[in-house]
Length: 73
Image (cartoon, rainbow, N blue to C red; front, side, top):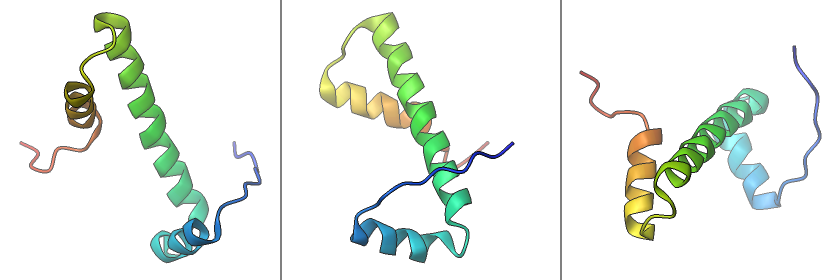
């Protein structure tokens, strides 16, 4: 199922989206939102388990847990 939504974007972001999305802005935005939601869920799990970490450690581990592995084994 697909739900139509309307958003307003700043001009610069809208232009960057047009360039990056290669004609399919909806798919591009959907993928970006999935990544952000996964990241937010991972951050919530870390905070629930360990409390608020040192900001540098937090950013390091959040990126490690949510970014694709550049060299899959």
